[in-house]
Amino acid sequence: MAFAIRNLSVLAYANGFTLWHYKTGADPLDTIGAGNYLAHASDMLTAGDMIMITAVNGATILVVTHADLETVVTAPLS
Image (cartoon, rainbow, N blue to C red; front, top):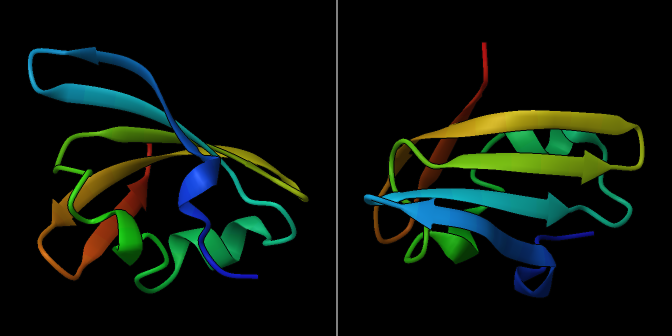
């Protein structure tokens, strides 16, 4: 399954920071954090945003480390 924009929701926004939630559907966590999975939301995401991910095999929080017109790079919150 691919990224579905309808499953991405804003939970909170303040001072240029956004906390998001994304429900993956059938995609496992390793698919979400790999590659450019969130590229279709690149115009909405910015570096420093956090995304709470709910997947079929668990949950995690990712931090957007880079976002431009075609690329979104994330890293696990540590």
